[in-house]
Image (cartoon, rainbow, N blue to C red; front, top):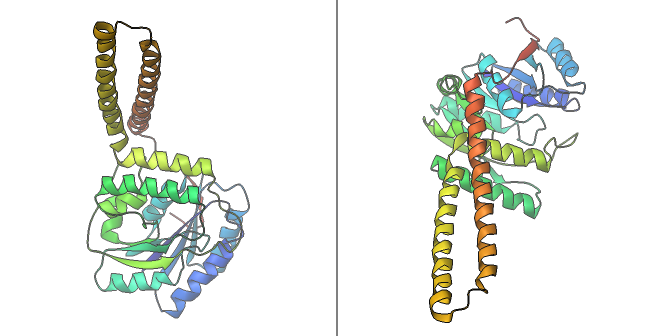
Length: 306
């Protein structure tokens, strides 16, 4: 059986449409399935609509968080609650074309254990958003060891891969990277990102920035190395300024002009130190979160008996 995991946050306008669209495709292809909507602490009517869909179709199931825990938590909750032999994760807004689920499932039947949904295009994005996304994926690609510039959460996982992810104890887990990092027999399916059919995007610039920082620091130690690199740069500059100051003192006998150099150097060093402390502080906060051992999410209720 195929489990389709659909995180949902304030998606009351899309639940019914998404449920009917995916169900229609899978029924036509004669694929045994369940739809698992994860209500990530929505403040609108999302949970009630999920309940209505579950009452209409027993193959539709719902999980409701006690509050908003974020998309990563919703994905892992879906994997934990899924009963299928494999699962597909996709967005509720149907920007991930649901017909590609069939292509992924057929590849799974051929023996592939992970089928990555790879973006052929990213849809409409501003120049700033494209630059930020490229910078983010460059860092993640270097950390993982392969290109993640077109990666997405849209993918199929075999039960073996699902169990491996569930056995990882990380509280701040980055699903998109971890599902690629674990290996197994993999292949790709390309798709074009579609425009949202209803509602508005829940990702503000601030939320995307926070999402990027959390996932970079959760998955890779690369930012810590920036502190080391900055230290090397400051050391080189410091040596250069020191040589200049000594030259002025012994050969030109004019120390006063060095005052400007000193101020610039002090400001630059202070900025690097503060930046370094900020990066280190971020990693310490991650360690603090892991040590506390709190769960990734709290399930308030479901539409089925557990």
